[in-house]
Image 1 (cartoon, helix red, strand yellow):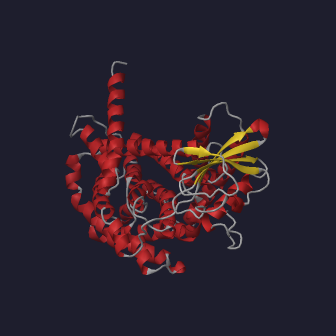
Image 2 (tube, rainbow, N blue to C red):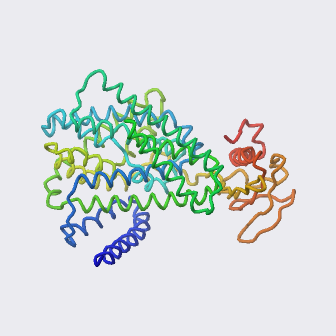
Image 3 (cartoon, rainbow, N blue to C red):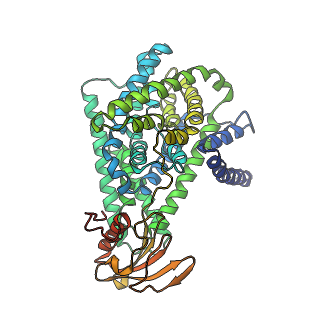
Length: 492
């Protein structure tokens, strides 16, 4: 008990420093994970002397943090943004992973003299990209929705096949004709479990009259966690179940949606900070010096050979322009996920596993510095960066159970086609009306002749029966303007 105030104080200081580090990382154009790793190293044996060397605990805590990160990623992903990139995202998450494992393993078997099992294990560990690392850089780059959607889907889904490959190779599972069937089962079952929990969770939350608003975000995240546990217990992919459940929930008609997404975002940041600090704490600077050469060799193989080849082969059916393929090849950032995956063979006591962990630390740091600082300039050089990218409207809802109605809070984003639309041109379904518009901090009751503007906040009162139709209509006009129906835009 005497140490509790010290531990809480250190934890609070680290958390505050990590929050401030986000601003520093944005100004530098680099993922904040590097600063979090540095904090962990500073707290570790080479700095303040905190000794932490348990690979089993690191793996367990790392997977727990990864579940939170995937849940946040799925909840905050708009289906309309990733739908156009569904095919490319799935191909990058599956075909590209297989190609990357094979190419990386073959190259490292020849360059580093690793035996085939260990070489392929290196390839499996390095096959997964990291959502937190990728989007902390892309957030201000202005990349088009198709590319960001493909990268977002890839980083959310490819953890599952990479994790399966690492476990199979670390446990020495016999490779025969049943192995592909096992992988297909795990991924398919994980997908089905995620869809089921996402749909059932959304259905239950819409009908639950919880006594406090803050309970809805907790219940939503709990559904994602239970989806992971169910997937693992059924020998399916719990990681894929988590992401799919969160994706379905995030695109469902959730009560207090804005509060839920804000809570999930904060929880995701907390998981990232804790994970990277923990991994930095586990690292030993003395061992990392010996891992510089293999780490640089592995990084060069992944960056210059395995990633480009995997992108080109997986994108063959989609005929993407070479500029987009070049950007996808360079945007495969590695972050915490490969380090967590590298803990699996180390916890199994596999010979050479410690060297792999140390090399992955070096590789992540180097590739983050190289890729993170050049993604923005590369996008501009390839003509893929846009000065401004319109964002979809934000819609939040609060149920009024006794009245059989709901309140929708709508924020019109810059670039929205709702800008300049008269209220009469919205043609909302019967049973819905805009009761309040807040503009520049001042509210007023709108008339039919009132025109909407960017950054307006709308309060829409609607019956529960037409609630979905109201949101579809608002999203349709947001995307296509007052003539949305004539342009075939349904808002789905």
